[in-house]
Amino acid sequence: MPKKKTIITFKPKQVVKRLFAALPDRARDVVTGRFGLGTTTTRMTLEKIGEKYGITRERVRQIENYSITNIRKSDAYKKEATVFEEMAKIIEDLGTMITEDELLKHMSDDKSIQNHIHFLLVVGDAFTKEKENEQFHHRWYVDKKLAKSIEDALKKVYETIPDDALIPESEMIESFLQHIENISDTYRNEEILKRWLTVSKRIGKNPLGEWGKSDSSNIKVKGMRDYAFLVIRRHGSPVHFREVAKLIEQYFNKKAHVATTHNELIKDPRFVLVGRGLYALKEWGYNSGPVRDVIKEILEKEGPLTREEIMEKVLKERYVKENTILVNLQNSDYFKKDKNGRYSVVK
Image 1 (cartoon, one colour):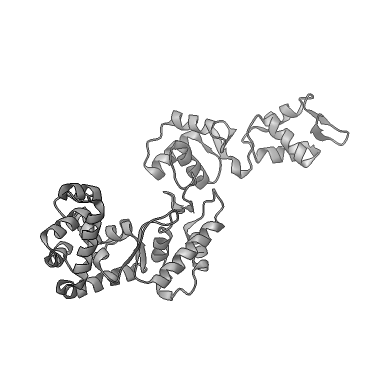
Image 2: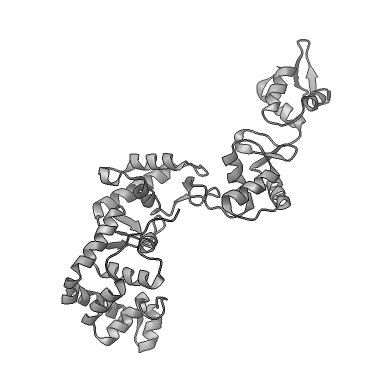
């Protein structure tokens, strides 16, 4: 379901045009190029604009800064006070801090309009931008204290997540809430909390809505093996490779050929063949290899067991006929039976 957009009451391009009245021609042209406000939405680099005017990139930067300062001091800027108040209210309603990409997409799908809104954010006194770093995406906020609290909480949450964990969304939100200090009830809102979580570059969500560390293959899904892992995990029990292919197409809308899917399952140690064409996840406790090896590992771990006890434990790990287990137990090179009818491994 597409996210609901905020309907803005002003026209960003017209507002920028009125603000530009405070600038001389060259300054206006420099800002237009730098922010992609002209016929093309591509933002020009300092170098490109410098080449155009035969000036240094530092001089271009000075002109850009001068232009923003002049606009803020102008009468035109004061006349647009209601526009900046409306934008501040939008950010506040979205949680006071939001990634730049989501904020711009929330206000418009049009790239040109997004560029004009971005320029208004840069010019507006009420808005602060923090550039992306190793931990966070580009983000804007209108409440510095709350923004700091959110970032601190995101760092703490990240430290609690095991490397390859998959966490249900409700649990992730609950964990996040526990780490945010002095948050008002206004922001104890699921949509706002999820929006804050996306500020982190180190925490992510996979296509099935499960959260974890963004560099985990369970979150940053790259290929058929990762898709297979997620659908088998979602299924919750061993599943035939043909069904795995169907589930990949159902959940991810990705074409999954049956033969290709089977080959990927065979190659990946995360999957264990537990029956004819049936695959389980190794993390569920299933062991790979012949039934004989499964019996051997059980006996080495548990000690001598009766035939019935061995059957029960093997059938938890393998979808095989009971007779297959019995035939393997008769192999005297591997197993021996004592006078009490219990089997153990031949040393």
